[in-house]
Length: 552
Image 1 (tube, rainbow, N blue to C red):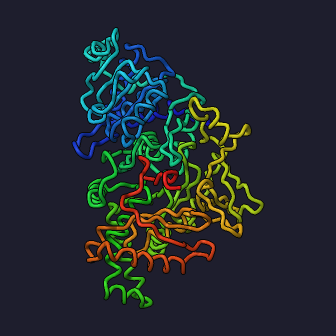
Image 2 (image 1 turned 90 degrees about the vertical axis):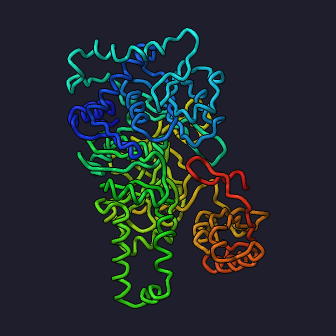
Image 3 (image 1 turned 180 degrees about the vertical axis):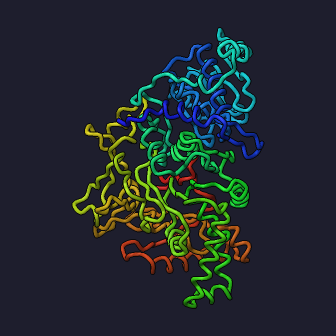
């Protein structure tokens, strides 16, 4: 058990950083100081108490990243209730299922999402409040939440007649072993599971962020990953708020152009992102640059290539604001070509590994110590790792982890919990990989997606797909087993084809060329027998992972 209590970490931070900026909305340009934030937290605590919210009750939260969203999250856990953050990308049916499955008693929601939800179908919800206007949207008969909202200013005045100051920040004693968050996964297996995250799980991640100085008092970060997802939640919200950093909320993942503009205005000291962001910047900014005739020739000249790479690195660093220590990449597999290029030009990035069930972090290494194609070292003193293999350093096996960050289990799903969480605390991640002597993790792919060749070789489709996705006119792909043969399902880059004047009739011949080129890059047992062209984009989870189960 971590000695640092999650609730007390925030209590102390709000007191110590009272005058510093805490949250800024990039779109409205409005900023809350830590004092403002603590005051808004106190208002919500009074409201919860008045309408009968009890410690341990669940409160659902769904909407885009805004200061109001963050206020509700922190106010809920510091009150002793349980927050249920729901990705706004979930369709209304799935969102409503989660609200009901979690037995949430109260809902905070964006107006645009509320329009598509059915209040009568929410069996446990007693009241619904708008994240946009803070007004009551609905309440069950007999409840007087509208009255409580109307009286909140008077209640604040009565509770804090001298005004709310740092000395009034006093949160209840909530032990770290208590449930604080139920985070529903957006996995590719066809249904969501409610991951039960304790205060200890949160503390493990927050304390690692503090001790490794990912964020510091007065530093800046730009938050654009979904805060309802464990990755963005821990390191774009909880860790910064724990130390007095300033968070600027973009609302959601923007286009590369808007993101670069925001980065240059805010100049963050740390950038947390998913591979897709860097991959898009690479394909939109870098590939067109290095593919031009003269520059392509110059890169083949020893000495000259070094200077060109320095200039590209400089442009990339400037694109992210120019003042960051490192870019941490996580949340999905990283394209090997992009990773190798960034490593070659010495761009300050590192790759971490985690999962919702670890709230989320398992491994991370500062960029100066990062090993190419790795996922960082297992968090020292917080997590431990083992590989289910006779030769863990060389032969991939399932990655199992144990430690402070490992979840309590799945909410109301003991069967699923028992499948992945052993009695001795080891969590079966479902990922395949190896582990070096110094604790560095190397991920090969998912256990569930691993295929077996006719001669018994393990095939990791993700590794083949990464190579295929780098090829001309390939937007995204999926490698599947069809009767013992590997088939690549390809959704083409129709925009690039149109720009190049490639017709739909020419596409099959081009894909056959792609197949031949791909087969030169992979092992004999990984060769693709056929390419099937997809007319539409693959079905995705809210986290933008392909729903592989739909294409088996």
